Length: 282
Image: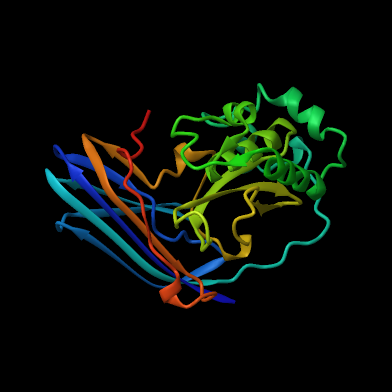
């Protein structure tokens, strides 16, 4: 059991009245329990919370006036991950629960319909089940270069496959796509976890449906899966953007700090990243 302490600070310059939808709070999930949390929004505005009951993903919405907006989320979360059995089988499509079936379909960033031939050539010969998804995870880790700044918010899994470079969400999108192309339901998970390099940021991994359960995989190998504090779960990054913005906004600052007790707090630097305007819905 581990306790994760999380601080997330987002600052924006709002050029005109804008509606925001944020996904930065620890999700309601069996793998962890929120011990305490605090959300501070400056200036003080009305905040409306809601939750996707299927995944436990939490959102909050607000209207920001012109000027600066600051959002700070602090939480302590107790991690309660269970072990993964060594032998897990794939499920026949006909046996998939109704709520899982749509995780087989192509989505905006995961073009599994056009990646079927490649997936079969690379992994069709491997015995179905946990070992095949592990082979996908290992192939991505060995074949795709982790290269911050190489991809952008519109990069798809097929582009990552061709260009052979990307960041954590690109690794996860490619894992999802290859799984779906082999009729294995898969989805994106975004959360908080401590890692040495690069500076702290939201981390993306993928889940595959095996033997009636969701199992986490991280092709970047940047952090243990059992340390991830889940924030968002969805078909791909479009479902779990940390900020969806309806207006003219520039992000000024994004700082994340994750302390999971592995190092003295003084050694765990906060990563500050000036970035372009946040994700706008397409």
